[in-house]
Image 1 (spheres, rainbow, N blue to C red):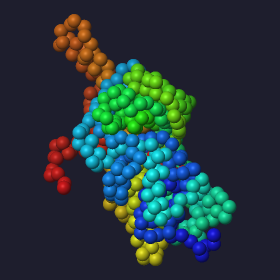
Image 2 (image 1 turned 180 degrees about the vertical axis):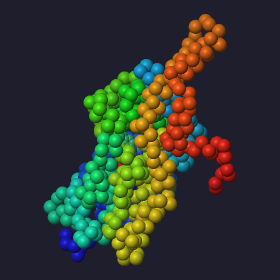
Image 3 (image 1 turned 90 degrees about the vertical axis):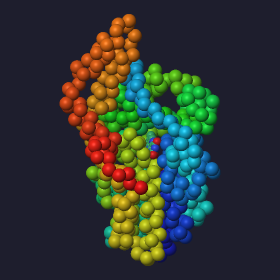
Image 4 (image 1 turned 60 degrees about the vertical axis):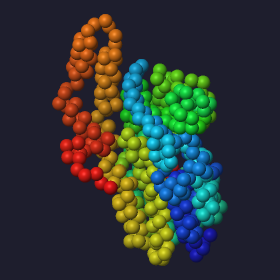
Length: 451
Ligand SMILES: Cc1cc2nc3c(=O)[nH]c(=O)nc-3n(C[C@H](O)[C@H](O)[C@H](O)COP(=O)(O)OP(=O)(O)OC[C@H]3O[C@@H](n4cnc5c(N)ncnc54)[C@H](O)[C@@H]3O)c2cc1C
């Protein structure tokens, strides 16, 4: 292909960000081509997760009626695991079982992304699969196309949207970012295990067709390292995995697989997985460097969306899919506006950054900007504190034949004696602010609710 024959937009990566951008561009009539290194969209995202879907619902109303979603998530559970004990908090809601299902579904990405790409294809986008993009072609500081790993691999376009996921090799080659350090990434191992639907509903206390997500923290989940374990219920499979800070796992000389096996063998986890058969195994990275290390997201002829831009919220929310779809949508809309104007310069594409700043993407990521740093500096929140809380619960519930006052004092004493009260209180307030995103001032001065 010569530079004279060109597309309007080239998108690198058919994940949630890239497909959303493709759908928006193709619907507006832009000539759109998407490069995906996998055999089909979703093939490299082999296992499952929770899809947060407000943007997909906006683009394809009631998409769950035709999309291969697994179960709406109506019950959320957070569980602290010590070596052989656990303490859990659960929330379930009948409202979440009604459309739009709280915009939260378990999905198997291999099925879902494929379906989603078909919607973009029907709108006119062209997908080139099994093709890795090695470079963005620059001409005088402007992106003018990509170099794909195939014969006649140079393809040209007015605009390149980079949505290649967490590894973000292209921005590194473009000189936009430094190589990632061990504190910048979480490494994950995940499995899909098959189990009949009725067994899933029985074991996880679910109404037929409904699903749950369980996030696990503490020693029993990640062997004292910074991270979490998870189980998500699909129709007749379970997605089970762990994610651990790369810096921690390197220090301990473990592999994600070791950590996953240990998590699966915990007494509160193994009975949930009993007799479930391994169907798939995969490993993946999650960017954790966050807001403070974000690098440029647009320039002359290019924009960056989704995980490539580091758009993941690693707080208790554990969300990336909604930031990927929203940033993909905004990048797509910016490309459409640029096409109308006939100008793909950085000055025009700056509208993408402005739209991101005004959307929940940047507002959330700014609010949660200190999560990773705080958790690295305060490992006690996933270690000592839950351990002490679990110990207190054990003492509280231990039946001894003694008066309750004695049992209760014993429970509180055990908890208090090892935790300096003032320091614990102050770091807990900081934790509430930085990790849960809740400003303690809101309790004192709640103000009027915004409509
Ligand atoms: C274990 C794990 C569990 C997670 N759980 C959740 C969850 O429950 N909820 C949630 O909201 N988020 C979750 N996330 C995060 C979420 O998966 C991501 O935020 C989201 O998938 C990002 O979408 P994306 O389109 O930016 O990238 P991806 O979905 O990673 O898509 C990138 C695509 O680009 C392709 N690609 C890469 N390089 C090239 C190249 N050079 N040329 C061509 N193609 C290329 C890849 O094959 C891939 O298909 C989880 C992540 C992991 C790893």
